[in-house]
Image (cartoon, rainbow, N blue to C red; front, side, top):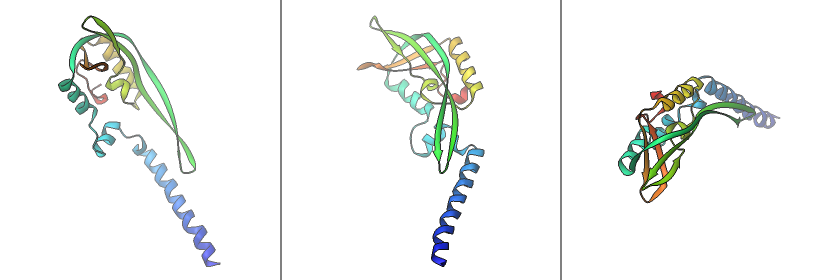
Amino acid sequence: MNDILIFLIVPAVFFVAFIFWMVWSVARGGMGQNLDEIAKKIGIKSSVEFFSDIEKRFSFTEGRLISSKVVHKTVVATHGAGFFNSYYYNLELSVVFYVKGERYSCEKSVFSMINNKDEGRADRALSLIRKAKNISVYYDSDDVNESYVIFDGVKDWSSV
């Protein structure tokens, strides 16, 4: 009889502790940490380091914004016995640039590649890129389609 209680109670205690940890983690924002913070913890470059590295290694030209909009994403994740919705915002954009007279398009920037949890920040970023004075496109000389755009030198969401 005692063995049955041990096999039932011990897992139940761990299960309840896990659920409390999940709720606590979500409540304090631990499940939705900034991707740059997570990247640093596991040794991946932050967006600022990534785009600074791109500036050093890639060729540069000016670009022109063709389209931009805020995109809302809902990600449903399962944790233990529950489902959790996470809401993210990023920008969908298109910038045109020319290399040796040939037209190319770039859709990659910090605002399109990294999700953001703050809708107001996404709206501010959209306003920033639409008013940007400097639209810099960095591209790989060997593969022009490998390109990234930086608006007015902004390389991370926290700058918006």
